[in-house]
Image 1 (cartoon, rainbow, N blue to C red):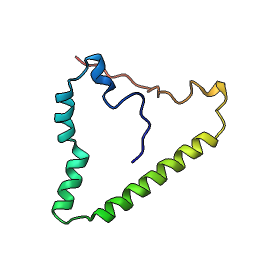
Image 2: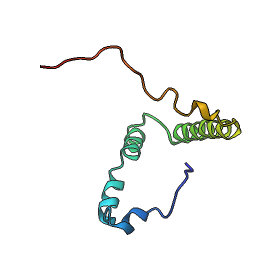
Image 3: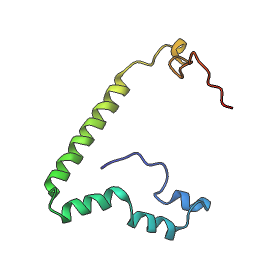
Length: 94
């Protein structure tokens, strides 16, 4: 699947946030890939079905991006609408 990437894959390693060993350990246990492998190993799903799902997802995401990029910006007056909901009651805890 394609994605937008800022900097290198290991850019966060350059700032001391994570060690490469820690990243590679997490990568080996990454949940989506692990689940996919388990489904394939148990013949619950085929590689072709996974490829079809990935293609469908990519098309859906592309359509959403295309729609967003083709849509006009909302008026500036709408910048602070629908940010939160004011509730009419307050709870008191003792």
